[in-house]
Length: 396
Image (cartoon, rainbow, N blue to C red; front, side, top):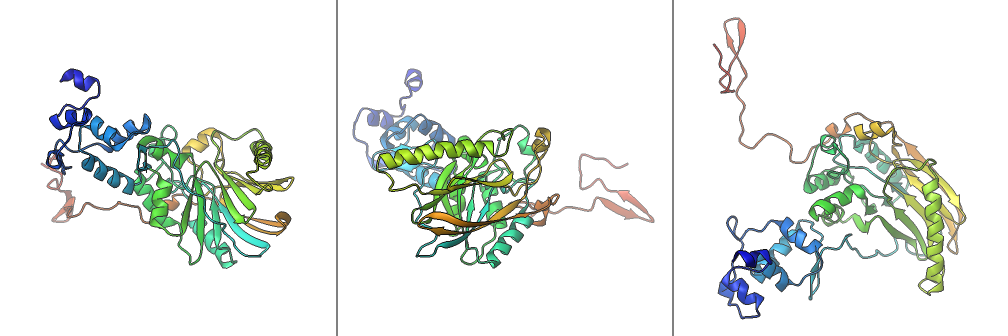
């Protein structure tokens, strides 16, 4: 039996029968219980899926559980945001969560478009700036904006850099998604279109949970476009490329944007050669991650560094990085897909210390039913400490 376990084979009678293609009665398949041997750690399934795609039968054999049990556990995990992909043939955990492309944001013959750009709110961070973000969103909303693109890092994440656990007020994927949901304003007709960044991806890397999809599942006004990079169709044939790079900033702010556009134009040319596109479509490259603001044109493409909605963390201080807090309002006219006029408005905000304290903290508060006794008692005119509420202290 020990050798069977070492080879990864099932050890129960029904498991061995399944391994060798023998029939199994439904009554022989164990059910998942609230506690006991049939509980399965979700991370055990994630580790198996990280090795490569498997069928439901293969996963059932490896976990020594019935297929109905595994099927139910997978449904529960997917409902909790685990990025498992299912087809009729197999189960897989792709390296990056997969999403489908959305339809164009703006329809019809209009040539003047307006949209907002924001990035890196890092909700869940002690340095988040929800007050400024809400004010900016309400301002551009009142000016007629109904579409906002988000260049990544919606949440603070987990384990992204040493000591990060001391710079967040909520730690789990669910808590940070709830904090984002509570702080990102719902405005009638306004929609957010965004990608995940490296902080969002940290939960997928560690736990298999796609926090941006979890947020989009909670809110109809959030459209999840994937991770790292995606094209947002502004008009038919006119796209904004969102990019959330990795690593630190270059010696010059514009350098990485310039190099990216150089590679992008080669990619666009190859798609024209292969017949995948009739003409180039990218008119904007919007860059998150660096917490810096700036904009410049490269031929027909405008490069925009999106800024951030997180203040200066202790980690940023140690690196000498000072964030630029704010967002962009973009208004432009297009003729046959080419930019003719563009108006960029950057709204900058000063950092508010401990801004997170102005809003409800998910799952925070006293334990239900908990009652604290007074720490002090009055005897005569002297206030004396009472040790009754703290049994390990003795009062003479």
